[in-house]
Amino acid sequence: MDINANVPKEIVDKIYEVLDIVKKTGKIKKGTNEVTKAIERGTAKLVVVAQDTNPKEIIMHLPTLCEEKNIPLVPIPKREELGEAAGLSLPTASIAVIQEGDAKQAIKELTSKLKSA
Image (cartoon, rainbow, N blue to C red; front, side, top):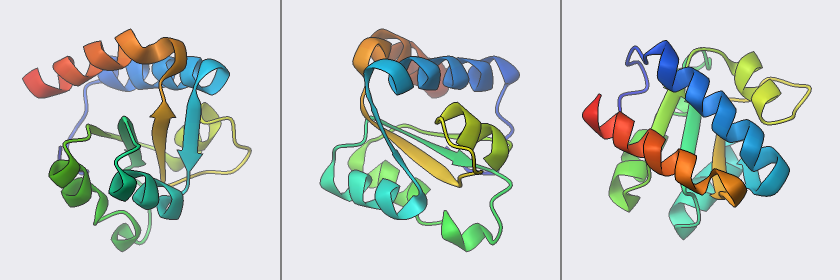
């Protein structure tokens, strides 16, 4: 998915819901370097990037990498919200879900919604 795409609010809300579950029962990698490594190693199950990342070059390589590895990527509007959803006190440009925990089914549903969007 294009990182500048306008993502429906329902999908953004679902992402926050999934991240909340994963934060408690799974495992998340935070920050573009960690996310890049997770994608390259094939351990990422889902990647979320913030559209207001500046400069854009920080995250520009992620959609291509995700496509190569067949990992779903979801853009969301704000770094602050992404950081908060990941349990950080700071904004973050990207996160990767490594272990889904109890969110496995929710991630499957989200992935199928993204494909049909």
